[in-house]
Image (cartoon, rainbow, N blue to C red):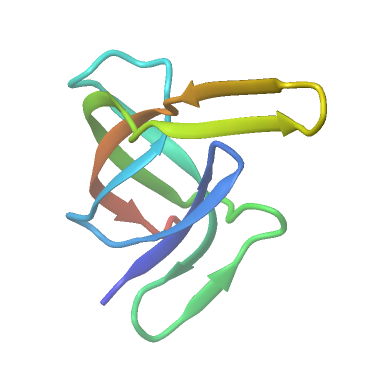
Length: 105
């Protein structure tokens, strides 16, 4: 039961091999492989914590697709002035599949 904690897009994710997750958009074409910074890695018995990253450890992932999240509506209102602003935002995401975790040396 090995797992790792990776950092991408200013967030941290706990991942295992075969996991699929949506992360902040990566500027990499679909179908290509990427590697992430490993903050912590565990092989089921030993846990290695990085300072800030674990030397020699890597997590490989495949880019499946680039998508967008659901729309978030932002409504601003100022009383007594009839000022009303409605804006929408859709965050761009990248769906990845974890293909391998290497604990290094």
